Amino acid sequence: MRKVLSFFTFASFFLFAGNAFAELPLLIYGSSASRTQDIVFLGCINCNKFHNAALRNQFGNFGNEFSPTSIYNQFGDWGSSFSDVSACNPYATNPPVILDTKGNLRGYLTLNQYMSGTIFDPRILGACR
Image 1 (tube, helix red, strand yellow):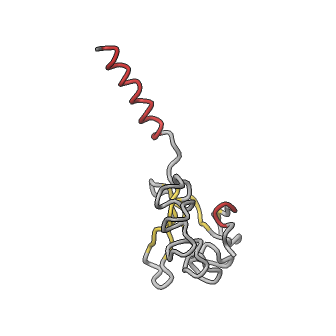
Image 2: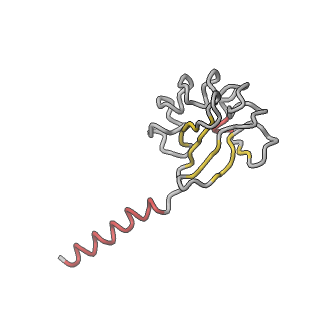
Image 3: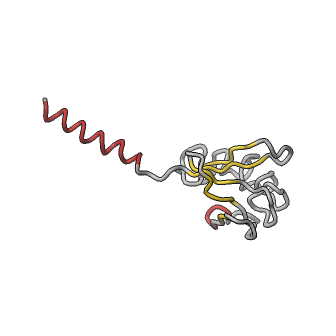
C-alpha cells in the first residue's frame, strides 16, 4: 500500500509540475475603435490550436478571418490596414498589446516598426494585407 501511495505522489508531482513549467499563455488585447477606453480580448497566441481562443484555430472567434474580433479580418477594427487600433496598420498608434496571464506587458502586436516594444511575428501578422 505504501509503495502504491508513493508512486501516485511521485506521478502526480510530474503531472502537475509539467503545467507549472509550461510557457504562460500570451494573450492579445485591443482597444475598441469607437471608444479607446474599452478593452477587447483578441485571442491567445500560443494556446493549443484546438482551443477556442487560439489564433491558430481558424474555426474559433479569434482565428477566423470573418470574425469581428479577429486580427485576421481585414474589414474589422483589428485587422484593417486603416484602423488606428489594428495590428495590420503600419502607422497605428494604439495597436493591440500582448500580455501574459500574470498581466505583464510583452509588447505591441503591430506592423508599425517605429513603435517601441513592437513584436512583429510573420506567423501571426503574415495574414495582414
